[in-house]
Image (tube, rainbow, N blue to C red; front, side, top):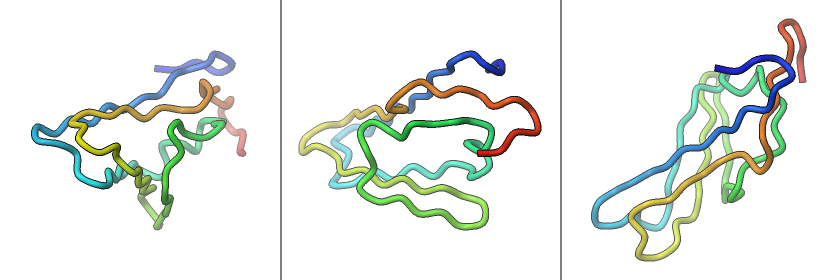
Length: 85
């Protein structure tokens, strides 16, 4: 839950027993981030694509890890209703 004018952290943690492989791709509903003012992701995605409904963020996974986290580079700030980026 977020309130206009207050910073809201966003983070995803992906876990896969046996390792993540070479890449991890997150698929996020594209409209989700339209209400936020963001400063990018940390780590930065190796690739970012979007279709009409979905934002795909592909990250290079460090070798041998079975868990990784992705978050915003800075905290996000929800925009007031009716605002656009």
